[in-house]
Length: 94
Length: 476
Image (tube, rainbow over all chains, first blue to last red; front, side):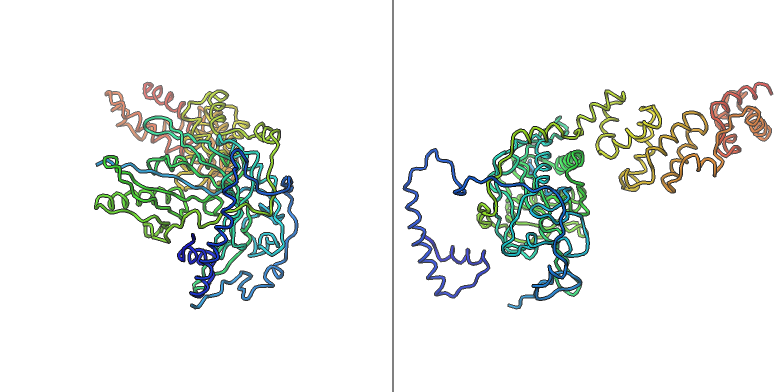
């Protein structure tokens, strides 16, 4: 079972805001999803190594050679405010 | 009542690779803000991080040098949290399979050598750098975002701030020796967080662990630990406890200030990073890194004792910093007398470094100028005291010793005729001293030698003066 407090905690970690009704809804839905997934616990996994992916690819490593990145104009082009070439943190008014 | 302090350390070190951890942007320190960035390190959607092979190699080097087990099957994980210096909303790090596990560093305590064990060393990326302006704005530079880091976590096995300081000194020395990091605390390439709490040995009562951040020097770290030790003990004595929290060290006020309550590990929601496949390292590659590991401090120390016939203490001091050890070995190329070079470095050179709180590589002294100077003194061209004066002049001006000696006319007077003239003049002026000496007052000789050195502006050959003086008095 998932409690209302746990949902609020998760929302807080994700920096999301919900109405009281939404939180009630999530509490109910989370519990349903969890109990469904918990069915997997019935499978006997003794002696089975955990798997993190389905393919057998091995990570490729990159040689340590510098390549040109973006220009500062490109880096800053999508941001709302900049100052002296820095990203400026927007002030949040509650 | 007896209290026991328990200290564990977390050290972040930036690796000296050419490029960042997951992209080919330059890993040069500083630079104009936001000019060392690309879609990967500023976290643009669709960018694919690819691991820097040299960063892995350096981390393995550190692992081998610190006696760790290297995990040849490992992976990258995401550590999720929101903070403005973190572009993606997560940091690419390692969770339950760090690249290096276990290991230890030896320190010297009153009870003898103590092994401080490591929990792990893992690889991760650095975050951007925030600057707070006087207008209350926060500006962010992402040049540092994605710089390769290793995080070294110790077991909570240190029991005094001094033990922690020694651990840090030895760690820094080793990391510099194996050339994986320049370990400059002032530039943030070595950062240290302290976890500390106190146990009452009688009742078994413990305080909650405090994490201390914002430590900018080893000295600051020691002061912060001493402050926390006291704070924890005072609370225990009042029957109270500390809060499990993160505190910031304020160097100016000399105290720690509460920053925030510490969340639980689960709040980071670690999960394997799907941008990476499993990392599988060839054993042969790890062996190759091991075989090519630069000489470690304790090996160098043993070699110095053996090859240069130095005492254990002297060899220890000379090899404590790689730069000093290299300076020593370079200097003896110019003057083949390891004991004499060791004496000069251990004496006047180190005193100067200590007084100015600088390192040997930050001075104007070079192995050649020191070697030449020692040779000039050894050959008797100038005497020891003048040599010290010339050394000071080299530190101040960076001039060659020959130039200084020539400019200031410091060449030792060893010409018998010239010396005789000076001695004779001094004796004429100090007849009372001659009488004193003849009456058995040996102190008079010291005074006369002083007068002769003064008259010769410190240039008289002291051995010749001593001999000549007695002879000439007896002749009178």
